[in-house]
Image 1 (cartoon, rainbow, N blue to C red):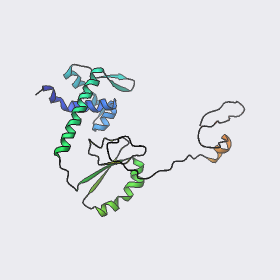
Image 2 (image 1 turned 30 degrees about the vertical axis):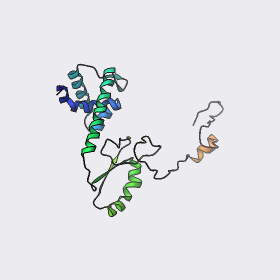
Image 3 (image 1 turned 90 degrees about the vertical axis):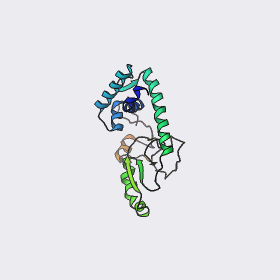
Length: 198
């Protein structure tokens, strides 16, 4: 066996950092500190004797070698996840993992959960509040509730409801800015002739 496979934990950290091109986001995803992510990446670079990231502003960009490694690591983890899916037998009743945004969870979903629990008392529901678009095919997430158009057409999707969105503003602004309709308009600023876009 290739001795480098002993460092698979480092590859997990590398995959997260490469996906987000951010040590801080990788740290949040893995529930470790940013310093720990940085240390693990350095350790992997020392093992492989190659530079995997370069700093670009606030983000960490993959080097050409890093991009090549990430493609293979991502493929490997995808293959492993597919293997786990084939051998794991999930019980009919268990924990239902649902991810959604904070507002939807607190205002709409959580207040209605008692109805589901009353009907299915043996199924525990775990609400995971997140703004990230999780991969439902290769994660513990069973259901994702998101606003907007679908991004992954390989999973089953249903529209729950249409949420109307409309613009509001203070009555004084309507009068002083002479706003006739929502959208871009011009604010007259005294007699200077200058304008701003709303």
